[in-house]
Length: 353
Length: 127
Image 1 (cartoon, rainbow over the protein chains, first blue to last red):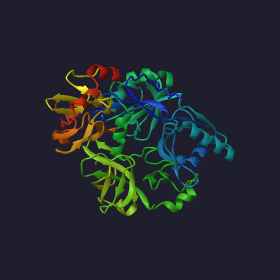
Image 2 (tube, chains in turn orange, green):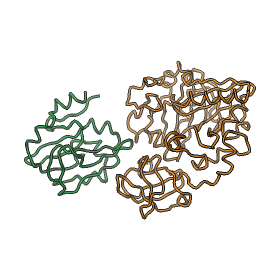
Image 3 (tube, chains in turn yellow, red):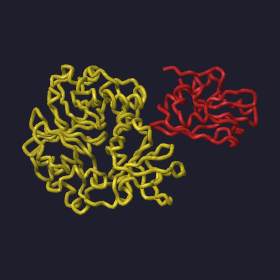
Image 4 (cartoon, chains in turn orange, yellow):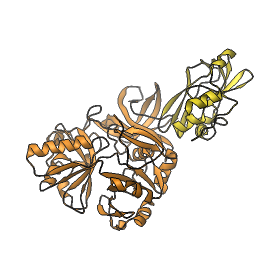
């Protein structure tokens, strides 16, 4: 099957990510990473899904399929949440917007999940006999992230939206480079930043308007790893690495006072045996997905789900699941790299603080 | 994009270079290889005195995004390693044919060099 193309011609190294041919790096991961931590960088994240839900029962449908308190969200509000199955296993994590300019919701499934989530919403809409319209708009909307301490100044110049009035997890409708767009104060880097959604056909113009360092998926990964943010398909996966939101460290995005698929199972799972932890390697090497985490005696206690060399700290860092008793502060562990045990210690993410 | 391919080296299909000086050769990775890998952050090398075997891996280069085994162009004994790479692995990106060299090997059989690619043949492979 041919890879889907983003809306912008990037002319750089690309990789298959969720069925999309996306840029990996434009200059170097280090340079792009530094731009976001110290200045501003832009990412084409048009591989992320977009699904709209409208109609009289839109709010109820959203509430019953997402772990967070969707009903509390006013117009122009954004929220992080998980989509769980009836066992409480995370199928996807998502940011959802209560649309600022019209009734209804827009939510952002991960790359390659747009069709699956649309189908899930539609199936449950029918089952529950709700009056709502669910539409997969993944190839109608382009999405760019503009991230870094200088992003408010850069984007502010190009938009008619008063960005200083936009709080974290708020979304507004307006223009970027003269084209209609949503701007949300959200991101995946831990820096001040925004995500911009515009019409697919306007994407090249909007991208070119955002005059700053282009960044690829490589820097996106190192930036989110330093914050300990989950990556769907790596840090959780319903088939290969099934996890509840409590195991994955996103219990803050679960509201058990609401009714959603998976809620009844999760009530008894708020103190999991295994938890998501950060690991810092104290020796040279790069911890990567699949590597064994062991005790100092060499007993296997878990697996690295993602890892890298942190460009900011210049230290090897990793994320993974281990028994809860080892996840407490600064326990000494080992990571086995190509058969060799390397000394490491646990710590709560984020790694930057 | 065009990559540097010095005329005084021979190459492996797996993107290592070998520069012969008398009966030893110096080994590293090509400009193309360092560009493909991106920011190199970690290098694993054999010890002096270790034996290496033609077309077998002798070391590992890790960039932020990938791990790559490095293969020996000839069989022989390691006579020197570039220890500076342990502290400054980015030399592999900055100067792959110079300060970013990896090991020197005293080779067993000169005829093994015939199996290596010429600069022109290597250029053809990567273009």
